[in-house]
Image (cartoon, rainbow, N blue to C red; front, side, top):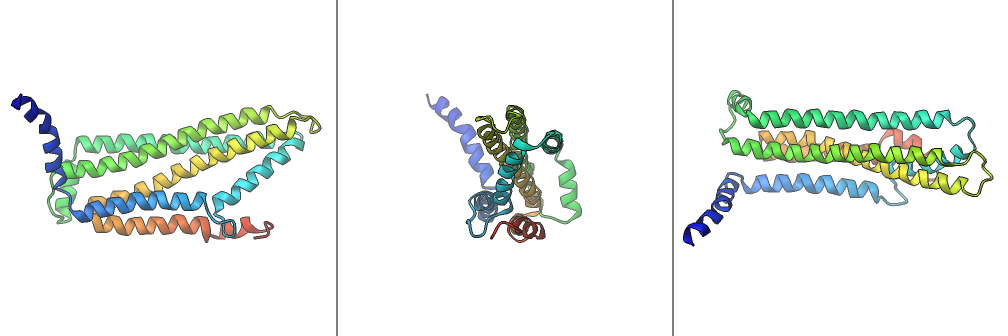
Amino acid sequence: MTSEITAGYGPAMELLDRLHLFSALDALAAGFLLLSWYGIGYWIEHSSPKNPSVTVLMERYRRDWMLQHVTRDPRVFDALTLSSLRQGTTFFASGCMIAIGGVLALIGNTDPLLNVASDLSLQQTPKVVWEVKLIVVILLLSNGFLKFVWSQRLFGYAAVLMGAVPNDSADPMAYPRAAQAAEINIIAARNFNRGLRAVYFTLGSLTWLLGPLPLIAATCVTFFVVWRREFASNSRKIILQGTGL
């Protein structure tokens, strides 16, 4: 019985021993990264009506797009536009897959990282520390990949709904179908933007390899860049024109 208990606690004790390799500052930096990633996403998607983000503003334009879709003849422009959006999701999903494969290969051979750390005169750390930090990168990339794949599929749903919009604008189902297509289109774009934010913060998370302080600094920079593009960019000023805000 004692041997069974000891065997059961073996992996747990080994995990605790490895956690001691990380400092409290490492935990703070990792927590700050995740909180910033979630926080900016929530802020963007639930921005104030008086100060909407670009993402929220574009939702209005997507609804207007589907209203114009009902009476546009021919509807080739709409099909081409949606096709270009789907190509973007495919590109980023493929990029995430390639990046995940590269990081997995690096986890399998961390010697290059150890050599770089030695060249930069960084403190020598066990391989498991490098591996855990790279796993965080993989998790962020995986999140981005899943968002892009789901966005791709939702844009496909939107394409089908757009095709189901009757050609006769007087048909009672014309505008309800267009409204459905608009909402699916919005959800697809929302997931695409979530995937992009995951990629942004993945780039920031790579600085954890240099230490917790660089990670905190990179997270702050990433947060500011994402915030500026959504709330203080020149493109936002142009999109705001004619909205009354």
